[in-house]
Image (cartoon, rainbow, N blue to C red; front, side, top):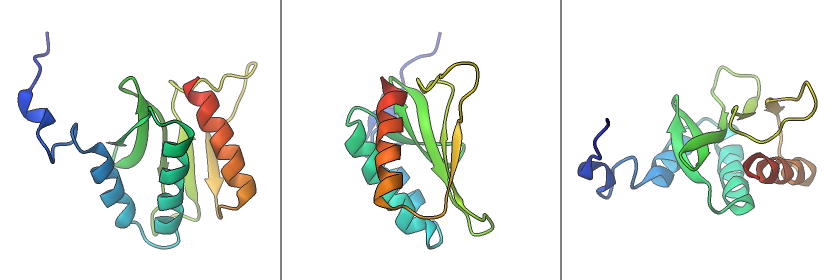
Length: 123
């Protein structure tokens, strides 16, 4: 059985400051991904306030009840930013559905779609 580590909830620790760690990761992204990442973070947090930011395989991610639901990444050598949804996301639709999206720009249209996807993913 895994023991609770009292150190893990100290200020500045990953469990106590998941948002700070995610924001630092976004701040380290190259442009235009940094700006898009800041906006994605705000959209995801506003869409579902109970979702918890954390790093997942080095990417900004958002968890519900400790399970990662969505994540994004954008690096200098990538053609586009990727917004992905994990198997814990409630996006099942028939026998086939998308689990990731390429983002080259965030307009009001994409933002509305992301809000709907995040709300559905955590429902």
